[in-house]
Image (tube, rainbow, N blue to C red):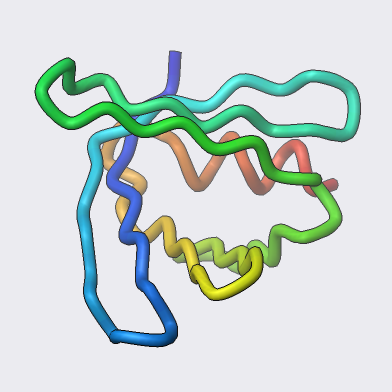
Length: 84
């Protein structure tokens, strides 16, 4: 299971939150879940909303922006493989 750090940014207030997450793929959807029980977080992203480059991935939903910047646990590598 690949893990990484997700930065969630509220675009209205510019508030940032960080989560240690894992991802699972279901057809064209990607489920992002926090691994920290004290900091629950769950997000369902459509795969086409995700923009992946060699060193990071970004998605935006409503007033939120989600950035995956850490590939230590293989998260960006996995997202890149799913993006094709």
